[in-house]
Amino acid sequence: MGVVIGWDIGGVHLKAVRAEDGRIVKAAQYVSPLRSGTELLQHAFVQARKDMGRGDRNVITMTGELADIFTSRQDGVEQLSALAEHELENVSIYAGPSGFVVGAEARRHSTQIASANWHASAAVIAKRRKSGLLIDVGSTTTDVVPVADSKVVARGYTDAQRLAVGELVYTGLVRSFVMATTARAPLNGVWTTLINENFATMADVHRILGTLPAGVDLMATADGREKSVPASRARLARMLGSDAANADNKTWDLLACWFAEAQIRAIVDAVMLVMSSCVVTSTAPVIAAGIGVGVVAEVARRLGLSWERFDELLEVVTEARDAVSRCAPAAALTALAS
Picture: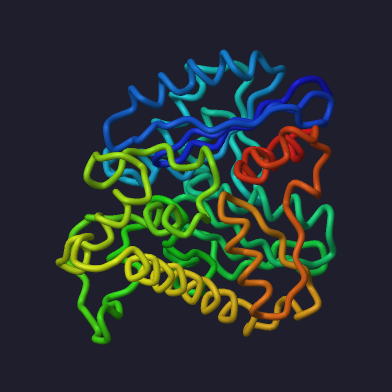
């Protein structure tokens, strides 16, 4: 089978996974915010190539086509496909149910290529399990994808369709704005409306609670200041028009608990909506992926569902397991291509 490298081009991160003869040996992610242009993505490819080495085959999926530097999602697909072909060799692009296509076919398959990374992960689950529910909590979004009778049975495919049926939730462990998680929060015994400014992100919430895994918060903070618990408390206080000095640490920690709870509830609601369509049963296991595996475990516990990690479905060296779970779609591509 040789060396296959899977690549997931996101709006903020580039993820890469190296598999040798079907066994994953390395996985990593790199900062590459497309809002600043494609130059940072090109730099990320250069760094990743140094780390991952050369591959006999490079397989690509993406969500970055949604970035507003592109005039349309189709334009994004075409530009990102061309960039990948320029940076890599022997490139194939994942087009969901149509399988892998070459760059020259990207325009014709743009609808199937756009934001199809979730489908790659679910397709691997369908090959390994008769049924299951993929829940992938990433830095920005959460995917909820049902698998039944060894098939991906998602009701939506495009972002718009998936948002409508609960299969895509715009909440993530790191980059989600706190103001997008809930409209109000309890403070000093009263409900306080949040300020609609990006003063804090969910990375601050999870940092305060000690639930932020190491190495996953790669972007700058909302105010450009340090990534510490005191600085995160200050940013959280500002969301309610206050300062950290106006209350003790326990007060701000409790507020962080509130925001984390609001996020979990949003994901639980989506999972219950997906399960209400009865395409998967309550005995189907949850397959947990992304940097928010801990959040997935809590969602499964609340709903009385069993769960397992996505990386357990693949042959992976022990030291790469956490990274593979965080880069599930790129890892899935290596399995599908092999």
